Image 1: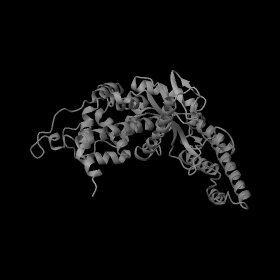
Image 2: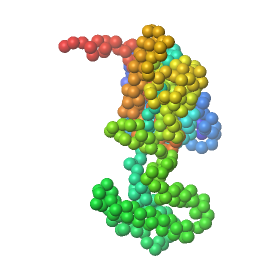
Image 3: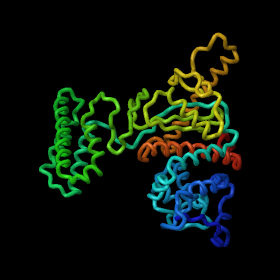
Image 4: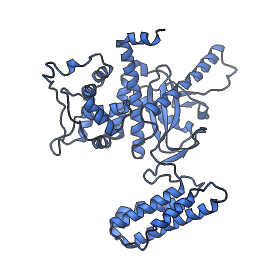
Length: 434
């Protein structure tokens, strides 16, 4: 059931209004006054019923918690606890009275993300772009790709086989099936044999252990198919069993491999990094303005596409998010093969043309050198705004986490601009020579 936000101010806490006791020039309160909360109330209210069910939490509260969570790089559990301790967080979320209890359970943030979906996160991202107004409408943008890693362990065939065996034993126990053998003790010894897979003299033994694990998984799966009721087999577990069979049959050099049981859509991306040869997750395209360093477009790709094939989608998202198409997109050499996409000129580093004037050569050189500014933006998204490891499930979780990280970056730029506007003396203290 939908419940409206309260508009009654607190009449007494040490004799004055709650909001009057806070610093009115605080950047977070300035941001709360600039965000169009009413638009979120109108857009997300259709996800609630009018009269049935338990009264909902205010939409502004839930949206504010999601924004603060991404801004402060906190988990769902931590942001709920921090909200209780911080009066500025409470004021940002629309509270008119100081609250001494938790705003909601941390799992309600999960339900709210599922409720509004990726479309709701798109609206929050467009709001973060719109706050910057003319600064976000630059004609030249920078485009680059990165990998948003998923919350999975380093995938090996032996790990997946052992997890399949454990899951099959758990299914049999939950349905009360008396197994002829669980193979628990043998799996433990096989796990020890696989540890030395890279050792030259013990590699053959490790390969035999992996083969035995696959055999054990096949034995348990066939037994469950015989013993489980037919309705339970086809309605509940048939899809899982088909996935397990595909994993057990895959080889080292197969394409479209499965790297995780709970995240089967994850794929492997090799970016040529010295410290990390392969990354497991989804490729993400990011577009930022050339001068203001504002993120105006983000796209999560469900397939491992070549960088040049990601341009149409990211340029379309830039046009949708800010209402204006980019005239020029400056990219690196990984985007070779494209010169123009949907009316946008693609600028790549390379040798100057003979017909170019000195001014054109210098301009292109400066644009390509300036393109490197998007690299630290990506680093900040990963280190400060929860993009280093994505804990949200599925392909839609990749989109949601990417959109919220980009929105947090844009809001942080707005907060920094307000901070230096109202506290210019802090800049003098930083640069003062002792």
